[in-house]
Length: 87
Image (cartoon, rainbow, N blue to C red; front, side):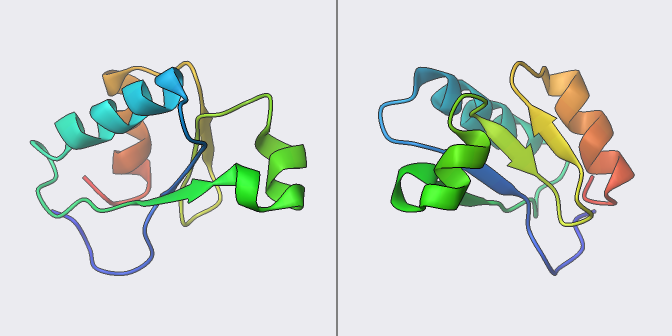
């Protein structure tokens, strides 16, 4: 079960097909973790984030600091959520 508190952040940008696929995996992961919530951050609005993630998005950063970079599968996501105690 999902614990309330800090949420994963999906670093993304507008019109990013891969980012849409990553978010679809998060939506599907809610089946196993109904309380799962995340924040989407558009890196184009922050120069430092754009420099860090510009060529790597989508990247999912967990509250514990782990980053899951694309490409990742539903299984990869589930394992990361379990490690973070979010699934």
